Image (cartoon, rainbow, N blue to C red):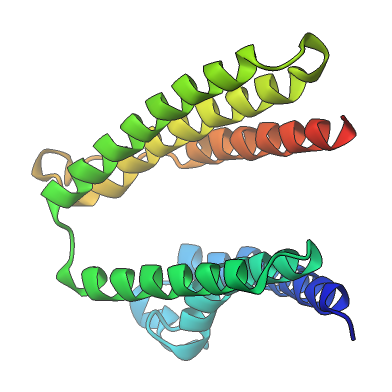
Length: 204
C-alpha cells in the first residue's frame, strides 16, 4: 500500500471514529448527564470517572483529530521529517497538558492565555492585511472568508472564557450558568467561514 493510500485510510478511519463518538455523545452521554443525578449516573456505563466516559472524552474526537492530521499529511505527501515534527509537537503538547491539568484552575495562567489569544488575533489581522494587499482582486474572496472565520473564532473564545471561569468566580457562584448556544453558534460560523475560505482557495 502506498504512502498516500495509507494516509487516506487513516484519514477516513479518523472521520468515522469522530463521527461515531460524536453521535454516541449526543444521543447517550449527553442524555445521561442531563437527566440523571451523579449517584444515578455512576450506576450506569457512563459513570463520571468510568472507562467509557474517559474514552469518549479523551480518545473520541481528540484522538480522531490527531490521526486525521497524520493521515492527511501522508496523503498530501508531506516529508517524513514534517510528520515527525508534528508527532513530537503533539506529544509535547499532551505531556504539558497532563502536567498542568492536575494543578487545577490557575487564574494567572488563565488570564495570560486569554491575553495571548488576543495578541495572536491582532497579529493574524496584521499579517492578513499584508497578504491581502499582495493578492489580485479576483483571488481575494478566500482571504475575506477566512477573515470572517477568524473573527467568529475570537468571539467564541471570548464567550468560552466567560463560561469556563464562572464556576471559579465567587460573585457568580449562585448565578445561572451561561447558555452555551452562543458559543456553538460562533464556533459553527468560524469553522464554516474557514472551510469556505480554504474551499475557495482550492478553486483558484
